[in-house]
Length: 358
Length: 233
Image 1 (cartoon, chains in turn orange, cyan):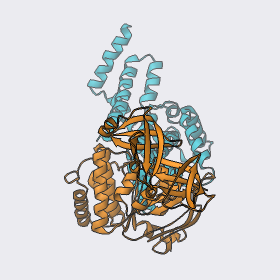
Image 2: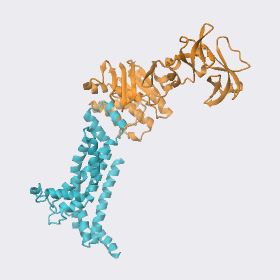
Image 3: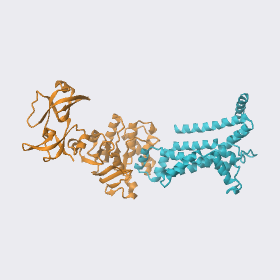
Image 4: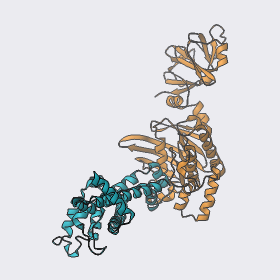
């Protein structure tokens, strides 16, 4: 549906996109996630023909959209876009939603019918005659979504559509996105810096970092098997240990400043790697009671902090390398964990995901 | 002090009794300045839009020049038009000097820069997200221009009001090219509120001046009220 080939964009000599390559399939929800300033908005704007790339090619249904100028309008009319900042035209809600239909010369009856339908879909039935500027941010964003939907785009682009909204509005917009994709088969590309939103909505995720996709894959792949150290950090993997692969008794282990860690898979000896371990895969037990099953990694250490986080506590342990795990409050009390407690942190080699470092 | 109080009382009487001379002067002021504003709008709004949407070398410089001309002194405009239409000037043959038409021309020239400049500002004030939204909704170039202007309509209306306010309150150009003439016919007279105030005050007719001054203020206030009402709708 959409092919990105080495797409580059510079603003005043400053590179924002430095070669984005990827494919978005027809009918899928594709999330572009990445930290602020990673070029997510720029990428979406380039696809919607709102900006011109400095280099590279964007093909929509095989058409090089930035090369064929005379087809610009027709191509743009295949797409709808919702922007991060909720913004409405200074007129009624109905008139806001009708704008795109008017551009296409739809007649009055059809406009009324489509607008009513759209209002109903976004949960704003009865709001048609209100002045759009008097709505809340969440309602305005739903008007913006309805405005983009009535033109029945084949591709819907959403640029951080929920970034400034309250949790209830976020939930409504997310529901709508899923419904639009499911009921109408619309291909949806949305950007977000909220990795969990990416996980909730997307069929596939592209992690945009340093001007390019560091990884493209299903949410499961991205969250459990991050391709690089940066992706691991961004998707919320709290334990990242840097080390070098060395041989030990005929097997490969990672040496991280004297601490030895076994992993399910490792590259050859001498390679520099980062080990990614999710907090929830770590077990913490008091040092004296520790009976670690054979084969598991078991690292003795000292608790350095117990920090409350919602219904859980994050327990940080210095094992020569810093590690942290998430435990319920009750578990923390039962184990009598506090700063200075001596503990053993254990985890299976299979829960260790190794990535090469450049 | 007594004279001033007396002046206010007399002014009230002139207004309440709809004194014929005073009303004629007020009506003429409104007609001349309104005409100048209508012509100014027909030129300034399209011109402002063309400058705003256009891209040509010297665009920034042109906008700077327009903004500088906001402060164009009214007597200088008066002098310029006087030189052009006086008997020895290039347009002298048209015999426009000391006619209401000359005043309309002078006032139009006077308010063009500020109306054009404020139109450009009004269009720049439209949220860039809305401009992106229009394009992404598939607007043609014309639909895009039209809708951006529609979005800026209240700010453009304010530009028109500022133009009218400047036109009706200026005195320098009106005196120079109008001459403050009170002729027998309404249409060939050129006495307006500002020139009349200037003349009556210099002749010591304080009450007439105060009455005319109050009317001028009321007109300005009225225009503002109408604009505010429209903007809050």
